Length: 271
Picture 1 (spheres, rainbow, N blue to C red):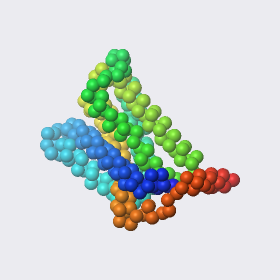
Picture 2 (cartoon, rainbow, N blue to C red):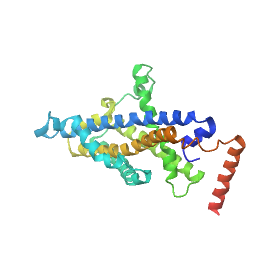
Picture 3 (cartoon, rainbow, N blue to C red):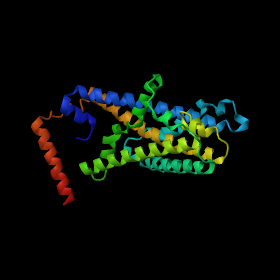
Picture 4 (spheres, rainbow, N blue to C red):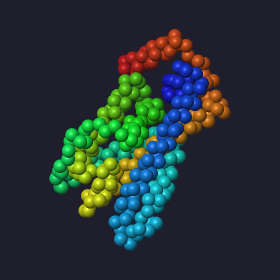
């Protein structure tokens, strides 16, 4: 089974194809909006530092979003996720460089005091509910599992689990390191968006950090769009041609036989 659509169809029937992919489209449609909002904030902060265009259209959020959208159109129309491999490597390098730059900023400016008890205890209020979608977005990359799995050179359960484990581990490390470094750097002055705290600082390093994060966001958007676009196309294809439901429905026994055949293929590949 090489997609959520096939998995859902074999388990729950044709309706699951529309439900699963509809949820993916809904989730992925919201993420580019969030990223473009970040692009607007970063672009506005960087361009506003240029005296000649400050407080004009050329330094506005709208201009930054428009420029980035035009630049990303080439990547947004790619047919295979393998074609976004270059963007993925740039994204990985950008994240690593961003962490290094934040650590250098901390070393240069030193630490600031903060109340650990105040920030660590749960706060049950409306703001907590408003942050729940952000938490889901942060860990929503599992919707790209099957597109990534189909791009593996050797498609086995072992490699799929290895890729997933490495992804979760990398994300967890990045989230924790950035949070700790930002808290030590800004202390109680840390804003909800760490980039806003960075943008308020003078010097060349905050500008570099903003530019690096802008590149990270730009390289992330095409991958997110690809997953959502594929889900939308699956809904359209299934509606018009029944591309998935025309295949024979698996029974419980067939599912076990399918699992055994996968294990045999893996054993054959290893031998």
